[in-house]
Image (cartoon, rainbow, N blue to C red; front, side, top):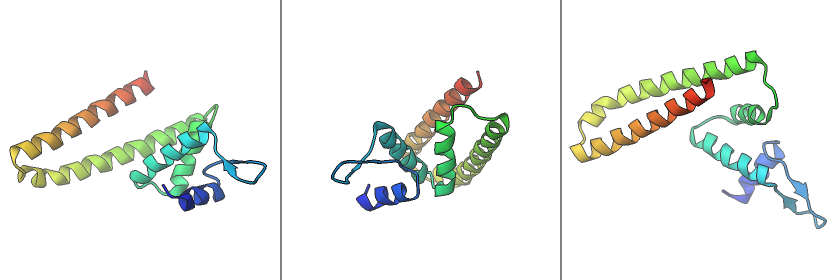
Length: 124
């Protein structure tokens, strides 16, 4: 990630930095975790406003039930869209040779399993 990107995230308040005596920015371990999270969200094509909301939720000590319900609804909608996208890929997958098809479907299966485990751990 470029210095310019980190400076931008800091300037819009997504990242927090302290200043050294010589005016250099000093980022905490928490800021590094936030930066990794921001990059993961960017890779999933989330807009910065949504990333800011997700960061705030991660850091919140207590969330109102309405906020949790809103977040669950958004995740559910994203899952529906991803499922639809996967369904659109079926004709393309069918054209692949068996080795390519096995590799892709195996990766999808692992991701679905991980997602289900994550969802179950949150709901239990």
